[in-house]
Image 1 (cartoon, rainbow, N blue to C red):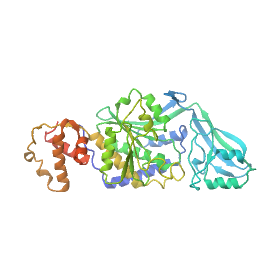
Image 2: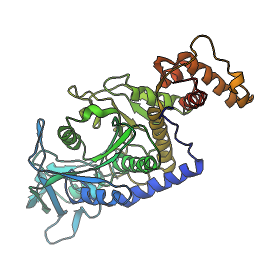
Image 3: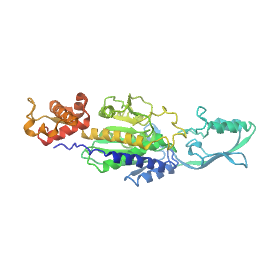
Image 4: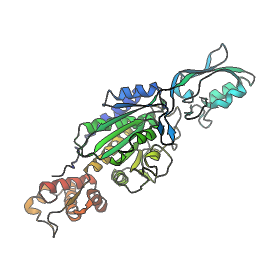
Length: 441
């Protein structure tokens, strides 16, 4: 008997509940101030560790990771702009996006002509605050709405402003979280999301919430593959993990980056560098059989951490599951990427598609028909009578015949599903039935 089994079907009521739970988790994490390193990342991982048993890793500052070094840890306390002796005009406590993340410390009085060189706005959306970082460079800045900027400019070019960024860089570490769920084999499915963005709901928290929900689900199921979940800062986190695990990445059979999964847009899958890896085919199959609009795009070395996993030296089969891609929705990297932008029903839909992709990967196998010369006599084995005349029964009957025909030791069940046009779930059910009857091995 094969160890590849179908996961139980998802109850629609459970799916609705999952959507609400994912949104609630995002709501809880939203106020935490996260950066590439530091206390906010640890606080976030601590909260996630209350849901699933995360292993938290600390990699010391200065560690060489390929062509990069693990940066010094950013310790941040406060940031504001005000008129000397007056009220704060721009205050980090009003919005975590006001400060350019990882800014160097500043304590100065600056004239407007100098200060405005460090101010960033979104003129096309004058009420939104942009999100920017100063990663890997010695710089500082503030982000503010364009209306705020215009108000400051109206105050006059001869004014002086007090600028305070209470922060420092110390020898500390880069922190990330890892969850490993062992399966029947050591070959792995890698699922990764980034944890370094502050106060951004879709481009950060949606991926975390969907990953945690899937991890909880998989912990309750038997599975063929082992599953590894990574909660890492973008770019440097993936580079660091790959360096530390370079000798073990050969175990990664399939991988997905999970990001921007909560908006109202349609699902998008970005292929791995290989272009036709099993994960690419599995994601395409699930989206095509969802009955919903979707988009599949080719790999390019721009985007999220697939750039690292799919770099030429590794070339791992890692794609990206998302909804509206980064930069293609106006709220991206602004204060409008808030909890109202992500919807419980969108999170639930993304989770359901991810679960189906995982189910396909975990259930895909190659078999050999034990009666390859003409069709076996199915009637006397009850393989006709058991299914009636419903549409589902007819599809299952077709799936049985397709599985028997293509089970020559060379075609996987995904091959059968693609060639027959049937959903993988139906093909897997047919294989399960034939295995019970002793017609496959």
